[in-house]
Figure 1 (cartoon, rainbow, N blue to C red):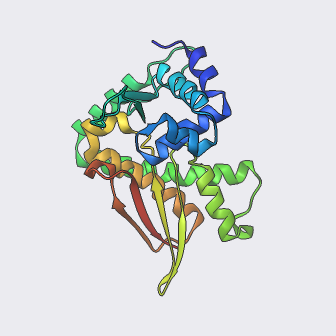
Figure 2: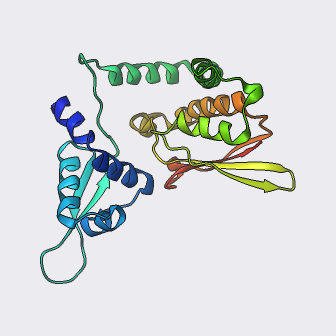
Length: 231
């Protein structure tokens, strides 16, 4: 097990954390030079950041296959598992695994109840944020609502794009980091439905939603999960 202090000290560096966020969002493998170019830093500095991120298990490094002679370079890509911190130690992942197995064994009716609960939780997360910031829905402009829902899921990665269409405004948003990746392989048939219900609850707490449709899914070998939302 990696020392929690090593994880926190590694990610405390602003540039290093930004590099990690960039690699997660792009879902690609990057060379040292590519990271150096993006962040305008010397390759030796980029290499140090990438090595430290690899040491704590959030990146994988493998040799680049170029077919050319010479010493091969390394390519760095985000790991699927990530890392988790708990002070003091707790094993919530194992508890979550048990609960997912129980939900699956209880069948479709239990999953429908789960979707309703997740939808409510999504709405409550936005309402709680509004309450904590003493904001009123009646006074929020569209741009403020978009900023709010983007901020509430910054680690998951909403990337909203709003377009004007003949039927009104449409928002496309993308989730680049599945927060439930560890359970997807075993329970993708309903975990995605639960997550979608939560997201729908968040959006309907802020917007008059006329359409909420998933158009891309990581489960179906897409790089991201993307949604179209009519607002």
